[in-house]
Image 1 (cartoon, rainbow, N blue to C red):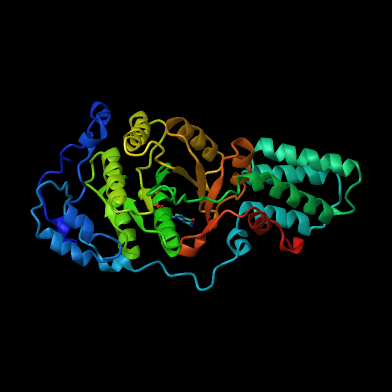
Image 2 (image 1 turned 180 degrees about the horizontal axis):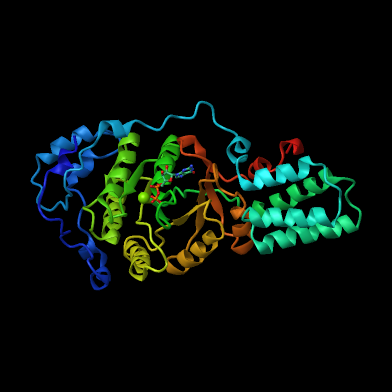
Length: 390
Ligand SMILES: Nc1nc2c(ncn2[C@@H]2O[C@H](COP(=O)(O)OP(=O)(O)O)[C@@H](O)[C@H]2O)c(=O)[nH]1
Ligand SMILES: [Mg+2]
């Protein structure tokens, strides 16, 4: 197993990898170290579907392969996360959020329709990360309608709130369309550390495979060896090839190689991981721009989707992250993870109000099933008291 990767213990210095900006700007062919020898590439083809076959490739002279040191695959780590016994509902997943709990307790008291209720509602929304702008606007609209005597009781006001919340997020519930005419369609995952980029890649791999797409992964988080290993584990689980170089290598070069390899094999989808980074890390933020420029040498439109992954528990900080990553590389879609558990739940409304960027997926837990396409009504109903019915 993994002999191919074990093969060459020589120092990892990608032969013609774009080591710096200057090199990255050279014409594509020179930037293109084959990440794997052709034979190994073939051995990794999805239809072969086994890393055993890489042993054959190991028999090849490993001359030009920028191979990293022996990532011995650890079988216990391979145990797939227990598939949820029966997919959990949005409400089951979201009911623990501050949003669901505070609105639930507010309306279960059968409150009187008055200014105090509106103020309490506004506080509850702001506290649940809906953001001041969106909360104020929502409540202001309810206040007008209350004054026009549109509501007979608190339940009617709640129903109006539900409608307004759905209207707020419906425009951003735009699923990601993997354009089949792009071969491969290139998806780049970006975000700060620990938000769930790599885990989401694992879940997306499974999802797209089930849709019949041939997927390849690129280990563009070259910062930590563990990050490369984590992605390979997902590759192994799903039996898809993972293009990687040693940790410390150039991320743009790894992803460029992967695109070349995926293209030459006619694969449908390339999903590239990247290292977590903060806007304060100027060099790392610049690296994103470099990734785009280098990919552009092979496909002017790549990456076709830049997915910014946001941790749903970070609240308003998510807004800043969108600004920063938009400026650094441009963002075409969002994934909001960890909405289960301790998330306050409201950040998606704040994002909708502020940016209008599509939320492609949400993470409602750690199992494979828990990455869902964002569904505006299901989401809102998962947050609001069940009595509302939906
Ligand atoms: N509860 C929960 N945990 C998640 C979700 N998505 C990711 N995680 C966890 O978040 C942690 C960090 O994930 P990882 O993919 O390594 O983050 P990365 O640094 O952005 O690549 C891991 O423990 C994941 O299992 C989610 O939707 N819900
Ligand atoms: Mg990661």
